[in-house]
Length: 469
Image (tube, rainbow, N blue to C red):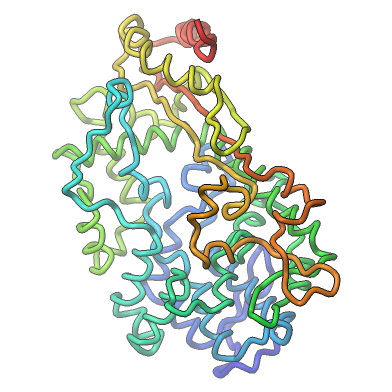
């Protein structure tokens, strides 16, 4: 790539998305560590392979892909962005290591603390032991891994450099470098790679953003604000829309989401029990990732718990585990999608949730199915733009200055400073501001003794649960 970095690019990796990726000596040492190689055992799309058989690509491939995009950035934008060799070298390492802290099945396990069991939902409570530390974010775990795993510290050269790289990919520098927005923003390198990679693996067209045009039109302002030229505005809008539709079609696919919700519920139950061992709290997770046990903290960590749970004497635990182990998707009984202002849950969705709360126990008893096998869940609220003007006015006021700077920005005409895309009145993103998409769903994990005819009867019974009266 013609970098002036020392040591030079001596090691070649061929990627199916970006082609040739050249590794420096220090990058090769990082990639060769056992801690980094662990990422080969973490699937990028969680349980997406249950729906899309080819979606078995890993966090390892994605991490190299983000580095591949950074190579392109340093080639076309080093001078426009005013990047020094040291900045580039640090950013390359941060790109390579940004996902090092992911849990088994990624966000699925990371968010177990937020899981509300169906019995708790019906009883309008969330039974959690608040005295126990919650599972940390994968960014926090990444920082712990990079600064405490000896192989990575050695590969990076020093504890101090490991700390600096970790701070860069977690985005918590005391004096934020504008360059960190390449990892933490609404159109960062991480997102650009996973949209392209996930679209390629699943065979859908929605994530195929115009990567080269976006990168070729990156600019920085005199104050260090990062943005794209006006002529690349449509490509920037398309990138935001691509993410929106990838979530709706791939990440929130009814089959994938059903399996993942069943697994979340299962892990929450196992964590509360004693027979199948799983990390009980955040402190145990922190100790795990700083020890040699990190290498076993892969998708197989969860897979083993699932297979052990199949033999559980607890019927709910056994059925949830069997559903996943034997690929019997939870059956979707009812879905209520909502696209509305971010401060509006949607009248139909509110009624649906209330009816689930008040009628689900009776439905379970009538069909002799344990209440815990019904999954009343909702997707994460999805906005076209994660931050800033597409939040409600109240939420926008609460944003930290650094978060406001993470919006996609465009250089208009001869203006030296870029303007947020959401504030450009002829932008589609502007007109969708303050709106978000969310889907409210009711699944049932079908026991072996329940036939499909009974499932259709339950669908008919819940079909009007989103209507009042």
